[in-house]
Structure formats: C-alpha cells, structure tokens
Amino acid sequence: MARITFLGAAGTVTGSKYLVEVNQKRLLIDCGLFQGGDELSQRNWQKLPQAPATIDFVALTHAHLDHTGYLPRLVSGGFRGPIFANATTQELCALLLPDSAHLMEEDAEHATRHGYSSHKPALPLYAQDQVVATLKKFASMPRLGECRISPEFLIRSHDAGHILGSSSLELVITESAKNTTILFSGDLGRYDQVLLKAILARHRPMWR
Image 1 (cartoon, one colour):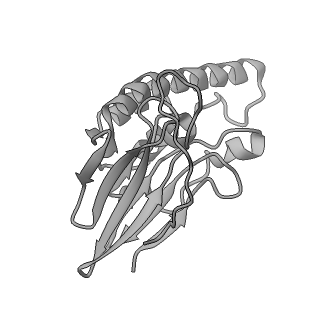
Image 2 (cartoon, rainbow, N blue to C red; image 1 turned 120 degrees about the vertical axis):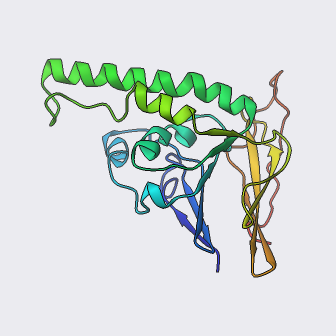
C-alpha cells in the first residue's frame, strides 16, 4: 500500500519534504531547507530518516528555498535520480541555489574568523561544487499537463499562482492496477500581481 512520510513542514511551515513510497519506488515531493531560528536551522544538519541513495525521484512544486534548498545535501548524501521541475523553476533554482551556497560559505568563513563554530574550520551546509552537481540532475516537467515519471507515478501540474513557475502537483499513484490520487498544493496564491494568476484555494480532498 502507498505510504506518505512527512520529512519536513510538519509542526513548522518550512523544510517541505514529502516522501511517497509504493512498490519499492520512492518519490520525494519538494526538498526544502528548514528556515527560522537556531533550532530549525540545526534540523538541516540532521540525517534524513530515509537514506538519500534509496530515493528514486524528486519533483518540485516551485523554487523557493524552503522547497528546494536542501537538494545539494540530498545529492551529496547519495541521491542519484532525476529532479523533475518545469523550465521556469529550473531557471530560478539555477539562481537561488548558487546564491544560497555563497551565503552559507560566507557565514562559515565569518564563524571561523570569530571562533563561534563547533567545527574548526566552520563548515557550510553545502558549497558551490555540490550545487553544480545538483543542477546537472534537473529533468524537464511540463508547466501544465502530465508527466509520467515511472509506472508507479504520474504527475499532473496545475498553476499555483505563487511565484513564476509555481505548480500544484496532482500525483496519481498506480498500484496493483488501482489508482490513488493525492494533491500536493505547494504554496498557493498571491493577489493583484501583474505576472501571476490569482488562484483561489478551494477545499479539495487529499485522497481520491
């Protein structure tokens, strides 16, 4: 039977990571950083309950770092599969992830210089070379419409109106000739924006 595990965004709104498992295949929807105070930031250093090497696919709802910023840690931890995202999300990630690594490297250098890190020298959560390896794993997914990523997983993308490229992902899981549908909304809506369509958050069942 299909199983969902919340690896983030549970008890907090950041660190979005939803692991879907069926027929020994594992799909991670979003792969975000925990953001906020020290307690949340420290969670980014903890090992995932699921080893990255055992995850087969990643699919992204949008480019914000609380949905994508953990990807370089996932890849450096052993993830070898494709990262599915639409073209706009890929372009934004190509800007945001290197910038994120740059800031982390600067913070680590500052911590080393002022001696307030438990590591000597202080370590960034990830560095530019890990970002480069991550960006090479991106695979195309349509902005709107269907993408079959495996016999078990079909994704339908819907406009989420949050940032450029943002999508809600309707995941159709096929198991024993039966389909189960789960909607991962991602972040929804902004209003009165020239470049974004206003999306109303309708009440929809998570399972169908």
